[in-house]
Length: 230
Image 1: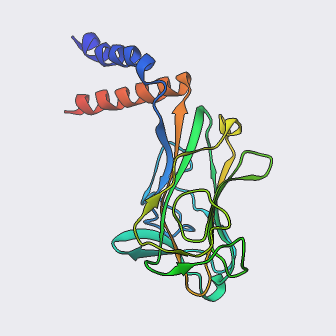
Image 2 (image 1 turned 90 degrees about the vertical axis):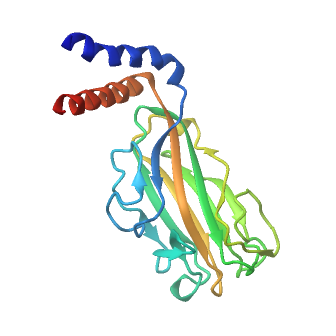
Image 3 (image 1 turned 180 degrees about the vertical axis):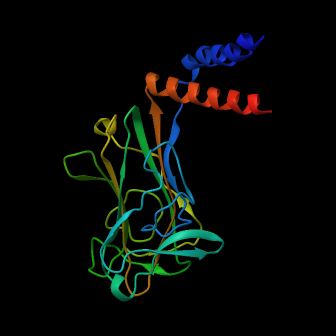
């Protein structure tokens, strides 16, 4: 009876491998319960072994953790030392055993405030997403002026919205596959108090067959151990 009990769940997992091998999993996600420079797992989830690591900030005074409309966010107020300066957060992700990586950013602005084009005036604003797979940063999205989650340049003047808006899931490219030193970067620039709020950053990936096998067997063993303790 013990042998049948232990093997049956594993048989089901092996049979399921073929149908789930293309399913994307969350490799890293941060909803900014913590200040980006803080170390810890609160609000940070995913399969990246370095999930609790802090972001590396550069530019101005950096981001601050805040609660805006009930959302925990990383805030660039676009004022003080951050006025007119591109504020960046960088993070290294270990994508060993994963392919098909994608990133999505959810953000918002101050409602009803006018944001100017970053391409036509030095007082302009932007939110940019970039990736470095080992040969320098490549921009995946440059949302000029107010955040709408789209790639646009020379956008002119746009009115900000405080509704959290998601970008599409953007492919990080083949260079991100099985990359143990993948670096992502989020950059915002605000002026004269025109703020940006980062609500969530999500990186998804498809596990390679060997990684998926490890994950599913590990989950099954953990489940069996909990059952045995009862």
